[in-house]
Image 1 (spheres, rainbow, N blue to C red):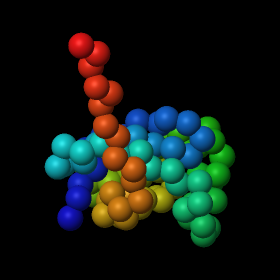
Image 2 (cartoon, rainbow, N blue to C red; image 1 turned 90 degrees about the vertical axis):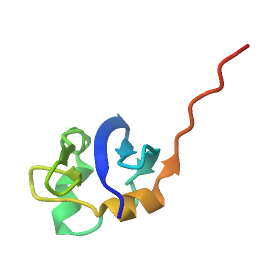
Image 3 (cartoon, rainbow, N blue to C red; image 1 turned 45 degrees about the horizontal axis):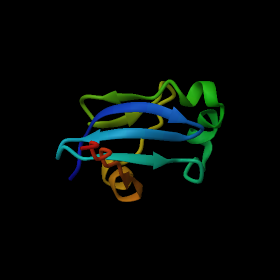
Length: 86
C-alpha cells in the first residue's frame, strides 16, 4: 500500500503528491470527480482546499471526500527532477 505524505495544488484539477516510498507523482483528477461526494470539488476554489489526512494517509477535503492512495499512485505520472546542466 502506498501512503500520501504531501500534496501541492498545481493547476486545474492537477495535484503533485509525495508518497512514502519517496516518489512524486502528478495526478490529474479532472475525469475522476464523479458522484455526489465529489460534486463540490468541481469548484476550483474548493478543490484547492485539498489536504493530507495523517490518519488516512491520503488526500481529503472538508466535505469528507477522499481517494485511495493506491488509486492515486496508479493514475499518477512520475515527476522526475530536471537534469542539471554541466
